[in-house]
Image 1 (cartoon, rainbow, N blue to C red):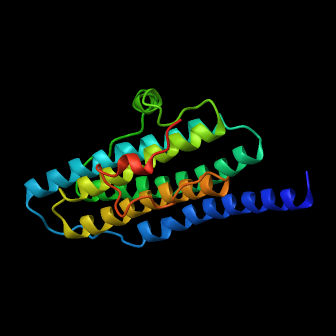
Image 2: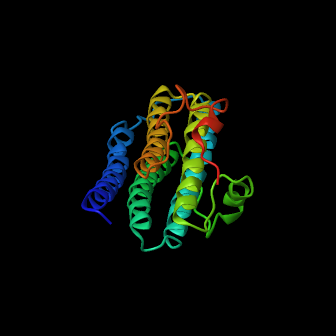
Length: 215
């Protein structure tokens, strides 16, 4: 391998690690908005608890998925880079989990608890070819699909909240999920995959296929 090739590969690895650290920085945006629990009609409170618990379920799923996938990654340079991104993103999801659980309690509700595993909810992604657990690259594609759907879900569910402060906080978390997807796509680009890091002006149901990378 020539010195130029070694230098290029090292630069790519550095960019991957930087992308992972950028994912961790996203947490600042999501936790900066601590929602105030305002006096609300009982029906509105019940509605908001339901919506927040639905979001909490998916945060539990994401935390499990990153932890489970981490054990499948190889010790290669790519595997280590994907792991760095995964751990940074998982850290954000843990912060989201803690915030959502706290607010549900403040509203008088009971936060949904984490299950032992969420493999059944991840399997459909694998069946659709939107990632897999058989290689470092496919694990990254699976993480991408999950993050894209998380961003879409927050955009949809936030609109059903009644408390304006919760809407602001939910939108902030949703933007962090979108940044996770962007970081993963940037990692693929740094590996030489020809793609646009931001493939569409929106992260939505209509643009979902533009964001996801098939196996």
